[in-house]
Image (cartoon, rainbow, N blue to C red; front, side, top):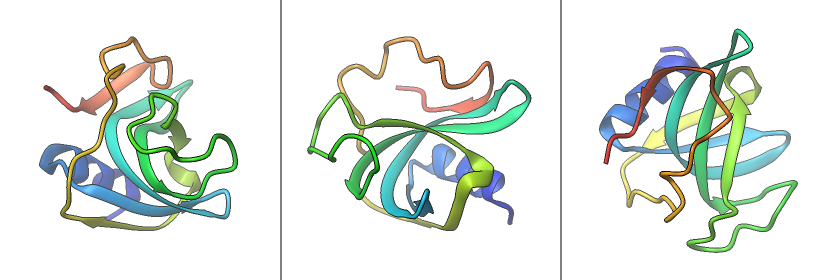
Length: 104
């Protein structure tokens, strides 16, 4: 299964994603998947791991990450608690053409 299909499955089953992006190991919950300017992107809520930007603080509204799908490596799915933030309903700019997303 390719990375895009794995992420689609993770969204439909509310599974956690563990992956490497920009050399950092990340633990995330995907919320939306689709295309931005014709390229596949995924909007994640990162709840653990490392980041090159803001530190990962539990329950922070700053843990949203928009990543190109082709930049994710060593992707795996796992069962676990679903993480999000109170600002999830805020309009996102990560994806122009949404294929699938979490529905509350």
